[in-house]
Image (cartoon, rainbow, N blue to C red):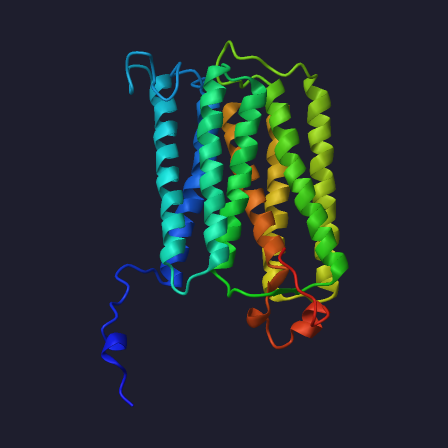
Length: 323
């Protein structure tokens, strides 16, 4: 029987995105979010934090002003924040128009919107409290939360939807969770060190009243714990001959941690030069992104699992996870 005219006359959707195109949108958002972390650090390290003394305007008289280098640096950072906002809006709209539609992608992209709005508000508060170190630290921590969100969004948009099953043993999955917790702790102990050091973003900004060697020692111990957990986890995975893709991501993460630790010790020995601090922040962003990517790869949608998943993961076929 031929289809009815009503069925054949239904208009096709005019504006939709393929999964690959949507992944490209998310990649752009990821790069911009990582970039804003680095430009934000440049603002602080060049003493440009109060280059504009109010918000959202640069001065009480001008919305934009580029008469001084510090004003230019601060406003470039604010303009990049605008690009981040646009990319996040594109990620949300794209998730609604992606075909096939995925509700999980919509929710993770909405999380980006909440994070960016939080950053805008916190950025204003940071200026209004004249770069109080707690506000600056909160700004950085929220940036790392945004980074994790966009990495999860990219990972999920690259894989099928549906129930997930571990590719590793429960003990290995728990070790990875401990590593995630240690990495997140680093994103708190690190800003405390920075907030106690010389790079305040402005010559008159307050500092934490901590003895720098003490907070550096705590941050260093935190890093060694993180490294030890990753080494034990990778050794366990290698002994059990886990999937090659898992090991590859793990080795990239290990290399980033070792490089980051080396930069941290070097900057302390050299008196915390600004260029090394920038490298350290780039390293922190890289480590958080790789840690998230590695942890997500320890489980997969059942539809994506290889035929030998039972032997590589040794996980019960009925077990599912959303981690």
